[in-house]
Amino acid sequence: MGLRIVVGSDDAGFDYKEALKRDLEADERVDEVIDVGVGADEHTAYPHVGVAAGRTIAEGRADRALLVCGTGIGVAMAASTVPGIRASVAHDSFSVERLVKSNNAQVLTFGQRVIGLELARKLAQEWLGHGFDESSASAQKVALLSEYEAAPATESEPVGR
Ligand SMILES: O=C(CO)[C@H](O)COP(=O)(O)O
Image 1: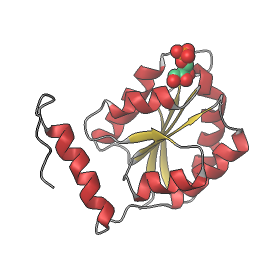
Image 2 (image 1 turned 60 degrees about the vertical axis):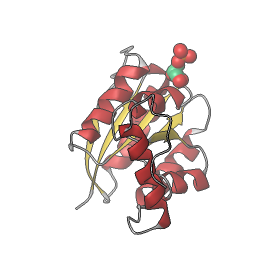
Image 3 (image 1 turned 180 degrees about the horizontal axis):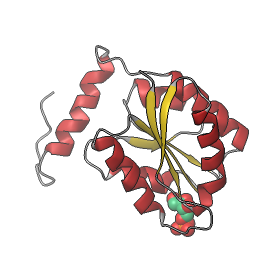
Image 4 (image 1 turned 180 degrees about the vertical axis):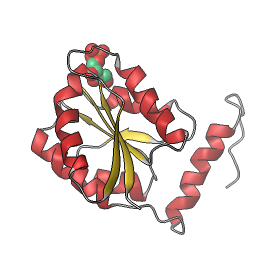
């Protein structure tokens, strides 16, 4: 089964979102592309878009998200507020690979005001080819993230090591 991918952006990331969406729709590794906005001439603030994307994954309606804003930072922060969602901006090949293989992040974000379109398109292609190995040493570290997320915010003790 292919991937179900959410795309989204604010107005600062709209052009890249549209270009990346076209690439994903043409990619045989992708079964479905779900666009959570914005549409042309819409001005939805990035937190709404990031959370909508994160919730779509958390509810099991998509596997991953590719989001764009001016820097990539805001949509990553917004998506990360959704429990169980790991999101980050990554603008180089190695970071994109480790975002999946080390961190099992479901969400990759780009900054339209930071990197060129062709680099964003190439990184998105590479991202599709990466998968997380649940039996890797990284899996235990990602599990710790989940444990901290579930722990009371005021808890002073580290979770089990
Ligand atoms: O990059 C953004 C948020 O990280 C967004 O596209 C622009 O935000 P602003 O600088 O607050 O307008």
